[in-house]
Length: 239
Image (tube, rainbow, N blue to C red; front, side, top):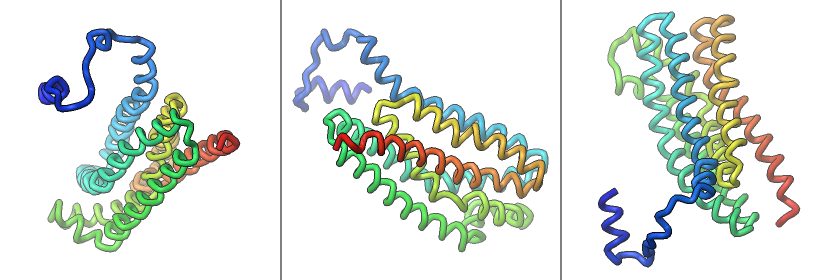
């Protein structure tokens, strides 16, 4: 923060501070939180969902929990580019929305989504084919690997659907539709995931727990895509 203030006040930029600009304007703050609050709530619900996920997994002992930990570490590696592209997409969508450039707006969503799907497809191929080698980086215990390898292949099988889902939700934020972005986030990570988790665990046991993640990712993608296409058709006449 201090470095940022030094940069802004040190005549190193064309921006200049005015005392009047430091007075809070609640209308602007409200608009900021309308876009930013869904992202915050999304992180909270995701954490809560995985608390429930780990609680259900813990019924089957410590080895499945260790397997889940490995899968989450690997998925986090793939999610880093998603977060980066999402953070870059948000201002692009917001800028073009404000400028009324609908064609560039939707083109940016399309290009970023295709790019992230291609990248996640590479991650998926690596994780699915070389699962023992990748899992072996994190753990050497044979019993844990015996559970981790098949569980990883199931849990990480639908990663290609996660990337565009997050980008589509980001697009709704950029369109100043924070409420819609929030509900779609909840649908993917909570409303669909939690019932599927308990239902599939009841029907299939531990295998059902692994299946809950890709199943909710695929269904969540279908729901989010449907809403995005509906929004696109509504705005299509304007460009």
